[in-house]
Length: 430
Figure 1 (tube, one colour):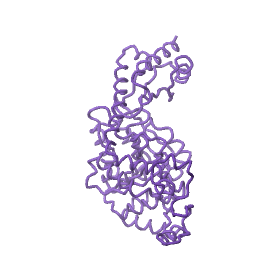
Figure 2 (tube, helix red, strand yellow; figure 1 turned 135 degrees about the vertical axis):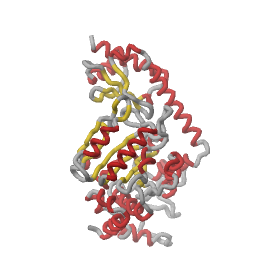
Figure 3 (cartoon, helix red, strand yellow; figure 1 turned 90 degrees about the horizontal axis):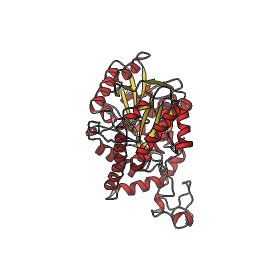
C-alpha cells in the first residue's frame, strides 16, 4: 500500500474506526498524490519560468487557446481552458456548501465535509462505488429505482442489489426498510435513498423522514456499520404541503457514529444544466471532524483523479457566475413554477374516473416523474409501441408500470397525454 494511502487510513481509523471498516479495498488503497508530479508542480507555483504544468501557454502567460472557441465564451480564459483541481474549484465548493446549508436549515451546527466536485451524479455514485463497494456487497434500495444503478454499481463494481418494497398503503414501506437492514445479521450495510424518487416522483413526509432516521439509528445501535447514499438529484422540486423540505441527509448527517451519510447532488436538475456535468459529494457523520473529512475528501479526490482527472472548469465557472447573479433565485423560482403547474395539471387530469379501468397512479408529489400502474392484462411494451406508432406519444415501460416525465410535457398537452394512454389501453383490451 502506498504510504500516502496508509497515512489517510490512519487518520480515519483514529477518528472513526467504523468509517475505515466501510471503505472498500480500493477505498483503503486510494489517495490523492501530494508528492510526485503534483507535489513538484505545487512547489514550483509562482516561479518566473515554470516548466512543470501540463498545459500549453501563450507567450503572455495566459492559457493557449483557439480564437474560434474563445470568441464564443465571455469568461476569463483562466477560468475556462486550464484544468480544474480534482477536488473541484475552491470557490464553487465553498459556495455549494453555503447553498446546501441554506436549503437545509437542519444542518446548522453540524460538521460536514467540504463538497467535492464530480462530473455530475452518475460519476458521483460511481466514485462512491469505488470508495465503498467491494464485489459481492449488498446495496439496499427500493424496488422503484433509477436504472443506472444497475450499470454503475452492479455491472461496474459487482454489487448485489437488494430491493425492498417501496410503497405500502400509498406511503413508504418503513417495515420493508427495517427488514432489509436486519437481513444477513449485523455487519456492513449500504442503503440508497433517492428523493424525489426516480421513477415514482415520491418524496417522504416529515414523519416518514423522522421514521427512516429512527430505523437507521436503531440499526446502528445494534452494531451495524451503515452507509446511506442520499441521491438528491431532484432536490427542491416539491409540490405538496407536508413533504420534508430538507434532504434526508439533514436527518442523518450526525445521527450516529456508525452511520456515514453521503449527499450526492448537483446542478444538473436543480439548475437545469444537464450537459454541464457538475455534481458534488458531501460527507456527514456524528463526531466527524475536519481531520476525518479531509482524509475522506483526499481519498475521493484521488479516485476522481484516477478516473477522469477533474470535472470541467468551464461548467464550474458558468455556475459560479449564475450563483453570483442577483436574479438567480428569481429565475430559478420561475422555472419551478412551470414544473409545479405541470404537476398540478397531471393531478387534475387523473381525476377522470374512466382512467382507473386501465391504470392508476402510484403515489407522487415531487420531482420530474410519475408512474401509472397498468391494469392486469395490459402489456406495457405493447402499450408503449402502440402509443408511438398510433398516438405520437412516448413513454417508458417499466415492467407493469409506465413512467411519465411530466417535466418535459407542456401543460397544454398533459390532458392529451393521459387521454392517449387511455385510448391505447382501451384498444389493447379489445
